[in-house]
Image (cartoon, rainbow, N blue to C red; front, top):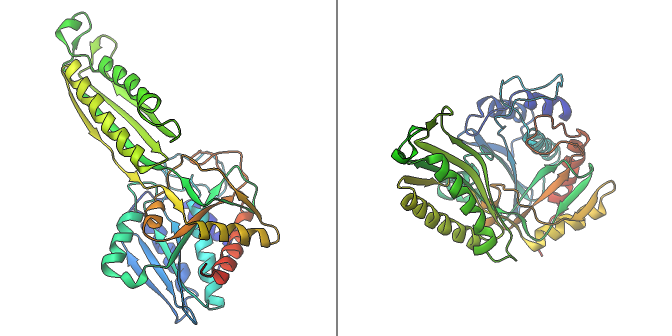
Amino acid sequence: MKSFIEVRRDLHRIPEIGFQEFKTQQYLLDTITSFIKPYMRIIKWRTGFILVIEGINPRLQLGWRTDLDGLPVQEQTNLSYASEHEGFMHACGHDFHMTIALGLAKRFADVQPEHTILLYFQPAEEGPGGAEPMLEWVKAEHPELLPDYMFACHIAPEYPVGTVATRPGMLFANTSELFIDLKGLGGHAAFPHHTKDMTVAAASLIMQLQTIVSRNINPLEGSVITVGKMTSGTVQNVISDAARLEGTIRTVTAESMAQIKKRIQTLCEATALAFECDVTIDYGSMYYQVYNDAHCATSLLQYADSVEGMTAYECPPAMTGEDFGFFLKEIPGAMFWAGANTPYGLHHAKISPDENLIEQNILFVEGFLRQFHLK
């Protein structure tokens, strides 16, 4: 088998978006096949799969999730192993996540674990969301492969390599996409009274949306509504007949998410009435909050504190979204930030995490899973 750094670089070259990870899946399967043992078996699902590693004395089934997909980002790192797929990049560290999972598979192939280990290679984390349908498939077709506990990590650019940052309770927020389309009556800029101007309607709606968090949500329950993109119009002297808003909603509680969506519906209906237009809403993908089981998160921190070279940090929650939350909604477990030591943030075209995190986290997660026990 190649070194883990070589494996990561191979994966970095071939980023693919959600449910199109065909090359990625094949690379992972070929790598595992090169060292697979009789107590290991592969069960495919769409462009992902589960690697089942039977334990010697399996009192527990422990799950580890990795994500496979890249992002529609044009890479700007100038690395010798930069993306070979124009317009796509592993800008969120999933190449690192996959390499850590492959490292775990190799370590458990070298020494069979006591517990049964289920390595979930999940597609489409970035969108449209692979965790929820994968979990539904397991419950329907392979309920015996539902782990007792589920774990995962995500690289964190702002932390030094060797950092394990997590917390009991909410780690990441509830998130939802937001798409709003407005349709009215366009016309000549000299005759606005003959039109229903959707640029003005959209601008008015944006300002109203910004009042939801400040005036409708409990200030102690942090929430965010961001309209990141607005498109409307064609040329300067034509009043637009259509506009589209694209944004995101992030909340600490599921109740706040429901309250915000109800208020958005009211404001859109009012806009349709006030501007005599049609307004439609699409919430796209929605990710459930990553809510860590207290015992699992505390166990991660305590184990990290006992391992030389690792630093345990009980971090604050973040408004980021991760579809691993769907697993934790059904299965107790925890996710942690793995320090990556890079000045560029997640989803940045120049992000280049420190490759030293790979071996360190393989050994850390392997040790943690081997020693994990019930409360």
